[in-house]
Image (cartoon, rainbow, N blue to C red; front, side, top):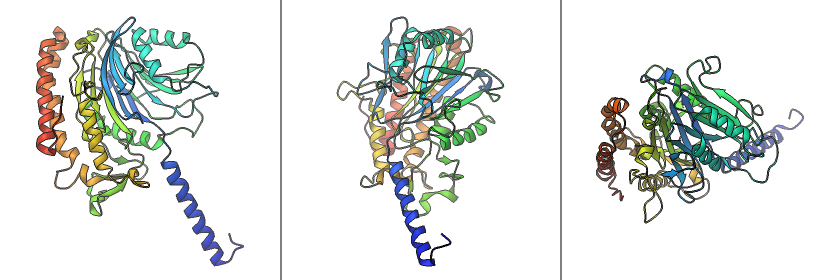
Length: 420
């Protein structure tokens, strides 16, 4: 550049700037489905029970909770509403085995025609696996190429907790109980694998954000409620060093709109799930799946158990009319309200003032008390259930009460009638 005239240098810099801007927006519109996840061992929770968290980003549109009778075990999990019988995207079975995944973009070792089999892989694992030993046998004996490129997170009822970085032919186990590997009692995964190609993959900023948030949780406690409120609805950005909830960084000081890029909750976020496992010796029927369907910042959590079989709360199950979960469907509609600009790159911009504002009237703010009420509703029963087992009739009644809490929250605060 030093050989050019001043005007030529300015034009060159200008052209490079606009070329870079063009590349940025082109890259930002490429559909790359992702997830943010973590496994927390019982060493880091007050009740000693492990947690498995998956914040799901996908182009699937809608998902709901479904129950299945498998070849060896019955199981319950998150399914795509368009093809609910073929795949599972996070789930647990009656033996207390649970599995989830995040897509990896730096593990694939060769080009294989049939890929993206992660959902089928997890569905089959829930059918046949009782514990980590079964799962590793499943991995070892599955025909190659497996058609996957993912980090599979697994917990069982015997204290097992690990991620498996898996490609078409091989896998690497990352044991969360290994104190050298996970000295803080947890591991976080986004969309790269630690044993994959260096600096490839996705989700590095989200990974760093989750790390920062988890350091704060260590001072309090890891619970499903904290993971939803503090991670799945966090608008902290580790690279920019901002948190939209802080007044100094609030978009509400200007137009209320801001660019949505590399936060944990994103336009593509369609569910957040926390599976609470059991301590060794506890009845595996106590394994609990808490599900937030649709865009997590505008949705509310509800629990399910495999023992309840097909008695899944109606707000989480596929409705007979639409095939979609009512709660998830409303949360997607509210997301589209927040991301109201549809032309051009409009979907990269969210109206933050609709989610969160100084008046406390943001959607995320007015719904949070209802979710806290749902957690408070079920909490007193946990100790009794751990001693005597789950009581189906009691859970039926709690489902009814929780449903009314949620329906009331949407009606009174947002004028929305939730139809079961």
